[in-house]
Image (cartoon, rainbow, N blue to C red):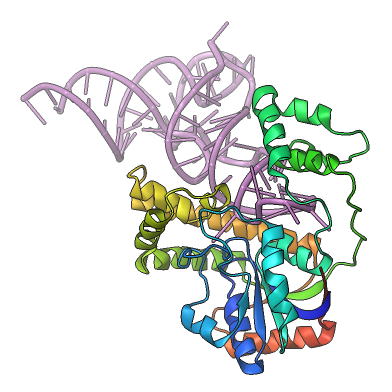
Length: 301
RNA sequence: GGCGAGAUAGCUCAGUUGGUAGAGCAGCGGACUGAAAAUCCGCGUGUCGUCGGUUCGAUCCCGACUCUUGCCA
């Protein structure tokens, strides 16, 4: 399908969702969350999910599409989001923390979808024979970057693709051009620290405990959520609260760095450096100006 | 106060039988189309606590001092 959207990127804790909430409320638009963790039901505090009140005023897509017990993926997320976007009557805004999801939206996912059986097979080979066996099994026509060649995940995926040669590869698309919010690194680190402490103050521990009661077995992807895996360890008495906070802060900082690296090189961004003193309205105005300049992005999926 | 132990990268520590040093973590940079908050790749100059001594040469040996820590008082 073809549809236009306004994308706003940015690392975690840059306030992009607040900006889109404001703009969507004003224009009667909807917001697509391109975020791999907002998809989990009940994981609200630790993912800084828009509140119930906010979601009652604006339609969100890509939020609460799976339970923590279920595995999720870019494909599952994309499927869940399509319908809502197609039926949108107002402008479509996309807030992106997960680069892959933004790309899936603008370019589609054309590779064969994840196949648990194939994956399990190669995972076993990896466990028993090591990464060299995967490298050897790779068809000679498949090219990986040097770091991907050392990366079990990517190797596994490459083999998964090779097992189903039917799929045509993507038509290279020009990089999507959209504004991105950013803070000076030092300021961002301070914000992250503040936010993590706030999450605990808002009851991250209680929320996690409740979720564990509701879903005793979490999927591997849900278990990877920053904040939740540490809180689980805290609840199990394996680490102290101070250690949990420290660990969460560190992982969030590392995430933010990777997100900015992705945006710098995998997209064509206009960086909007914001200051903590800037009002939400002022930031929103700058974002709109950038959209006006570059035009909306075509969605193809 | 006495007897030990320690003081090396932002943190935890290794090491040099004397030729100015290296891991993990953190940090920084990078990769990136179905696990992506994942996964992987690259980057290590730091008064080797301070002052003096021995030596061609000391972070390493010797002495004093400062600080930390353990045991005994």
